[in-house]
Image (cartoon, rainbow, N blue to C red; front, side, top):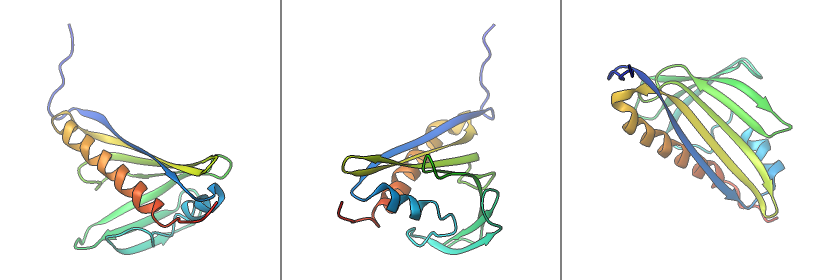
Length: 151
């Protein structure tokens, strides 16, 4: 007998964006790998960093909010130019949020690839899927906008 999902059952939602950047992969990676630096982002009121390296925590308070997002650095891989972090709770109703960003060299500079995922109730799956697609688009575009380097 097939199982039916209930409105409160958790299901995976995913966002993804790949964007070309006209800058050297090494230059983009040096900026991306700095988990403490959110100077490129908009809407951030305050950032508090605790620790260093994998396992460090970045607490972020958005403008107009008194709530803090606690982001934990899960992986930092210089050879693959990849960084991953997670937010256990508080990410717009999405549980177990994880984001992975990678810089991929190409002949004209590089790509920035951003993938994020989390869990939402089955009843909110379509809405939260759209949220993560917008998050992926927005973060990738904002991050890429700071690079205008000539190759």
